[in-house]
Image 1 (cartoon, rainbow, N blue to C red):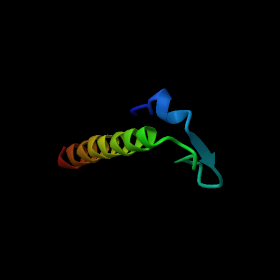
Image 2 (image 1 turned 60 degrees about the vertical axis):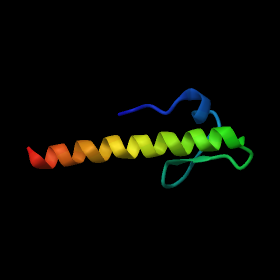
Image 3 (image 1 turned 90 degrees about the horizontal axis):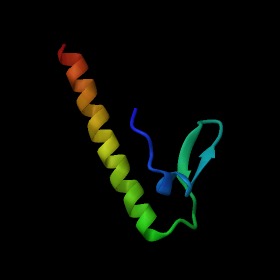
Length: 56
């Protein structure tokens, strides 16, 4: 699994009971953009892996 960059991770908080990470409300705009880009890239890579696993 791809790890979230530390610069983004320190601006997130863990919400329960789901256990998902969310950006804090006071996160700077450049961190917000970087987090969105990281999540898009992460989703593309995991979707590609799922497709490959289905084809095999």
